[in-house]
Every structure is written in structure tokens, then in C-alpha cells.
Image 1 (cartoon, rainbow, N blue to C red):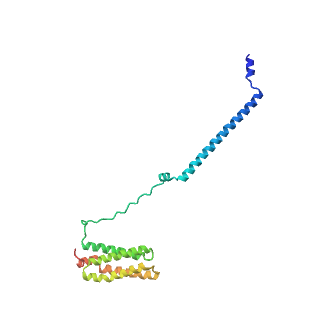
Image 2: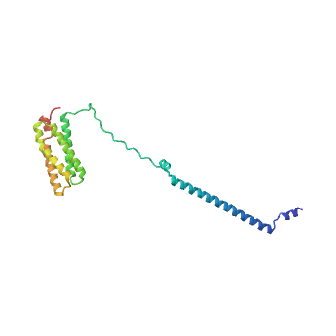
Image 3: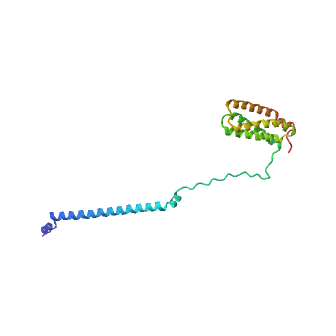
Length: 199
């Protein structure tokens, strides 16, 4: 009996080939299902991309793009009426030192950077004019030709670039101007001779 059961449980070669046909049709169905799922998924992805292109991604763009930082506005200096006003002789000394420094920078930079040359010339002229305002009457008139000379030089520098020979001549003129003003209007002589206006 056991042997009969064993023989009956064995599959015949005919039934095996039928099973193979069933298996191949099942695997074909599984593959076709996978293919349809893939195609429908791909279609949905394309549809989503198309919709985003039509609608736009403004919200997403705002989310991921950095916002420009606001530049802090430069604060302007506010001077109150309680600020210290220095005595005239200290202001004269400061303007004298500033003028001497800017004129020295001007002499060194002629022929190099035109913007720096103009800035040095204008600052030197400004400080020389401030010195003139702090002097008493006879010394103000003595300093006036030097102020006019430096003003003419500033005007010439603003008009055009200078040729090399003109630059050399201008450097010598500025050195002479520096020596003359420093010798005649230095702080020690002006304070000692009482030529600075009182406050």
C-alpha cells in the first residue's frame, strides 16, 4: 500500500510539461503586471513634473533660496552742542600737521594713482584754508598767495593727466611750497608771535 501511494504521488512526464506551461503563463502575467505598474508609475511621475512646470515652483524656490541680507545703513555722526571745542592754537596746530602730511602724500603720489593724488591735494588745500582762517589779519594776507598757488595746482590736477616733465616740475613746485609755508607759518612761530586769533 505504501508503495502504491508512492507511485501515485510521482508525477508523470505528461503532467510535468503541463505545469511548465502554467508556470510560464503565470510568470508572463507577473511580468506584464510589473511592466504596467512601471509604466503607470512613470506616467504619474511625468504628470507631476509637467504640473510643476506649468504651475511653477515659486513656493519651493522661496524655501530654498537665501534671502539677501539687508545692508546696515551707515550711521552719521551727530554732534551735540556739548562737544568740546578746542582752543584756536590747538586747532591751528592740528590743521598745520594735517596740511603738512597731506602735502607730503601728494608729493609722493604724483604720477601714480590719480584718485589718491586728487584726494591728497583737496585735503591739503582744505587744511591750509583752515589755517588761514585762524590767523590774524597781517598773517592771513601773507598766507593767501600760498593758498592760491595750491588751489591752482588742485585745479590743474583735476583737469587732466599730467605729462612726465610736468609732473617733475609740479613735484618741485610743491616741495618749494611745503618748505616756504612750513618755515613761515609753523605752529611755534605763530603761537609765540601771538598771530593766532583768540577764541
